[in-house]
Length: 319
Image (tube, rainbow, N blue to C red; front, side, top):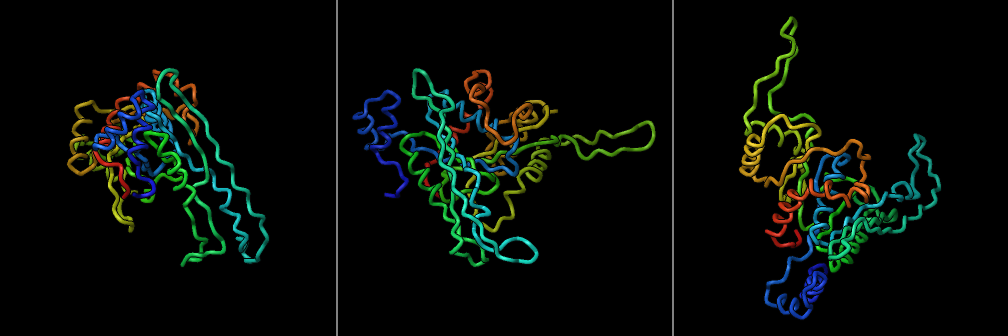
């Protein structure tokens, strides 16, 4: 059995935390009716600064619904410039650099249900180490991602969903993630074609309205192009969530038309949301008080439910 695959006993222990008897859960696991193995979810986005509240809101909604959720966050890379090699000065002179001390892992409980299994935990640790003595073909130190693999393996038996939060969100994780979901960030909603400023009293032309299908094509080109043209192997996408940084200038029927076109193109739509970036801190998860606020959590419950349904519709297997 693969190292990170959930066993029947592990599934039974997870079910028993929700109140079911361990022996009954173990028997059910042996018959193939066991709950889904934990999902290891990786969000993909070209930019991540304004998306932390969206991810935190989804995770909090899962926790409030009784799931045990881990936000596994990558620590700052203190070893980035500690490879004791060649300096970056023009003279290319070598200089001695003291190896940086890696940060210790930290774990904090963001929210816990007072009378149920719901739990939202944040664990921050190093995801990789670099070996200056082992260079790749391009002359860079080889990267060892075993710390992340170990952190995921340690968490599989304790959580229902593990959300990976890397420093850079635009690259898929084929080694550890079992599911990938795209977050599309919209600055200017494409409901009309380009506008032109003309001299005279007419001023600015408003542009010709776009159909939902045309708008969907523009959104794919503008917000998802970072996924295309990669030389890496293709990756299975489990859906797309849209976040607008301004009020949507179209109605629900128009958005439904975009969703239909996205489905036609193979991108499963999972919902629309408005940015909470003001006064949200840059690249930070919501404060614990926000995660306890039901009005905040309820805003993300529909998307969280649709996303969980999409994840459960496919096996949590490795790519």
